[in-house]
Length: 326
Ligand code: SF4
Ligand code: SF4
Ligand code: SF4
Ligand code: FES
Image: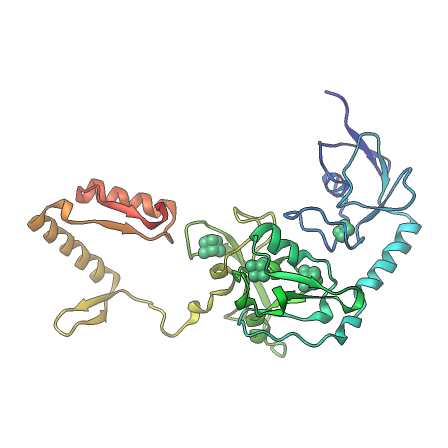
């Protein structure tokens, strides 16, 4: 196999077909600042934050968008690059977009602050490439440019699925979670904390980061490159966490009292004995095939496996199904 090498800051690096300069640099521990880049999206090359010097090229090239080639020589630091990067930083920090009216939308989850927007289009591209919803658009040019849901409608009136992926990929918090913004107490001396765990809504098992302040959840996020979800979440995982402290949340089993048709709190021991007795008596009177088990798609694989074992081996019926199977 022919050599395929690139020289980065005087060091030879083996490269793979199609690898970008940014990826080649990361392999030897050189981190280059990026803004419009998201490894889950097509390379865009819009912001120029990641410029590097390429020998023979008339001007610096964007590392995220330039494919590494055999024999290339690049440098990631130089006085000229420092000067160009400083100018680009200034341009990205330009707040003249503040002139655009604050964005107000009736949806409860996603807000947009044009003052924070650097027009990197990550949100638009995420919505197109990952969600294929095409629910966001880039409007106007220069300091008059801004992002909006299609044709200036509410997120709720577009094909938006409220997955919040646009919020997740936004590098500046221009797109933000309204709930987090309302719940965070900036006057409190309680520390913010992040707890990594697994979403408990369904069996996909997305890895989530729960942001909290004291005992209050203030938001949920997910990180690119972590878990089976790679930073993606659905609307339940990202936005529907208020059940955790909801006063109507069930915290104990309930058994129906058929005398007055009410549901009455019970201990786990009482509930399990009640279910076991009922299943035994139904099986005795009507046979095992009079019983069927339906597993929720929210169950994990392990839960569903245990349930089918219980149905087949303990009760003695093959009447077992999961709505995730259809
Ligand atoms: S929430 Fe999801 S579907 Fe809606 S605009 Fe953002 S990325 Fe697109
Ligand atoms: S809202 Fe965020 S992701 Fe979208 S263009 Fe502005 S800065 Fe980029
Ligand atoms: S798909 Fe949605 S509900 Fe299921 S684990 Fe992932 S975020 Fe949670
Ligand atoms: S991060 Fe490379 S051009 Fe924007």
